[in-house]
Length: 311
Ligand SMILES: Nc1nc2c(ncn2[C@@H]2O[C@H](COP(=O)(O)OP(=O)(O)OP(=O)(O)O)[C@@H](O)[C@H]2O)c(=O)[nH]1
Ligand SMILES: [Zn+2]
Image: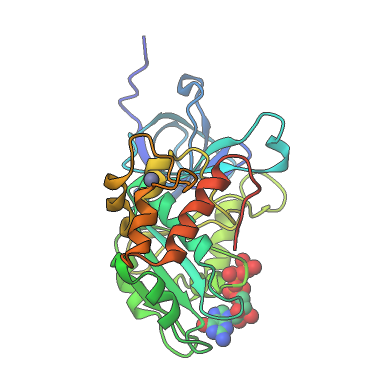
């Protein structure tokens, strides 16, 4: 019979490091825990709400046990394309649980915006039913017109950030919610995190200093916002492999194209090979930006084995 653990306390997982789970309990106590055997093979990721038993005092060198994972309201997934997994094929991984918002951080210049990456993130967000928010940094270096034009049909919420101004709009969008931040190296994600969470470096150090040795900075870390809510930084996630997303779900990441698929022949693969895909008709009539269709088809192709395209 399954133990009932009536004395369990609920914790929010803020970091995972080599089998040790750092959880925040009652909003003020950090408890390090391991998995109890009864969890079986179920994975615990950052953002999970878990039930803890054993020593939940949070005192140094104590270890609690996770006996239960609450049902997730969302699961943000990626297909790992790491070299070490090449032999077993690509692996699906849960990046973060229970996120409400995916903040796609992209700089307007240096490096230039990569709509391919943004499109990929949008697919992951829509697939996980997480709201996307486009966060355009380095607005002091270039204007957002071109990027926003590309997404004109999407009603995609966005905020602009520049160094000399407080990121108040972003703060407002994040307050009280659980948000995941993704972005390429150099777009200014760390700069933002440091502005949003005073003492972020120390906080990251504290939650990832479980076990011994240095933090390798590959997994996600949740940081509490002064306004309430959490941001989950994902230093190791540079791309979203989408092999786990079906072609149809992939198309839902392109709301400006999706309706035209009703004009496709049955079982259309939307690659355009057959010459009668409704998406081509839409573009030919001027009903959608050809670059959007190109981007969709690139993602479609990258699902099936081609090396990940990150531009
Ligand atoms: N001009 C300008 N530069 C910025 C802005 N935000 C960040 N930078 C600079 O861009 C560079 C990269 O910023 P980071 O915050 O380290 O970028 P990151 O996305 O965290 O990159 P990694 O640390 O590689 O993950 C730094 O030199 C920042 O000072 C901005 O709004 N405007
Ligand atoms: Zn089609």
